[in-house]
Image 1 (cartoon, rainbow, N blue to C red):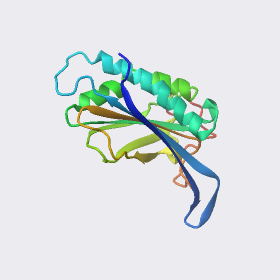
Image 2: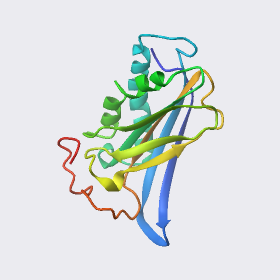
Image 3: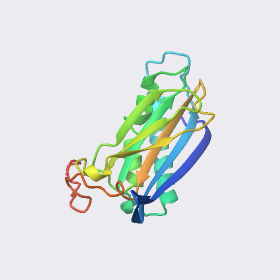
Length: 194
């Protein structure tokens, strides 16, 4: 099944200054969101394979849109995350089906590699509600400077029979990180942890 997309929105956030200190180059995060029809809204469906296939489609589409919005090569991406909000006629398992079994592999291809688990969240919601997209380093989960997040909000989504699916990608960690731990430059990305 192909996603029936009502709209796509892409946003780039740049931080140029923090606590009066310049951030050069600025830290940058991109989030791309697709608002899709929920094919199982209002009904219980045992087999959620169609949503899993939609997840694969959206992982590639939204990951590519984030990388393009940042104007970077896939190898320059440093962290990623994914999230979904299901409208009131859906269920959390619909978000899980989109996010977990198949979305990760095409997202990893969009950011070249991605050895670490993709941070994720899911929730039920209504139009205008904020969806938080957690972020973590794409290759090494222990890089604390990249524990972060970004919000996305669309005034008309998700409607009752829709799902809002978001992917976020960064080209950096938080501005002025100083809580220690493994750094981006030290990360090897062999096991997804270090």
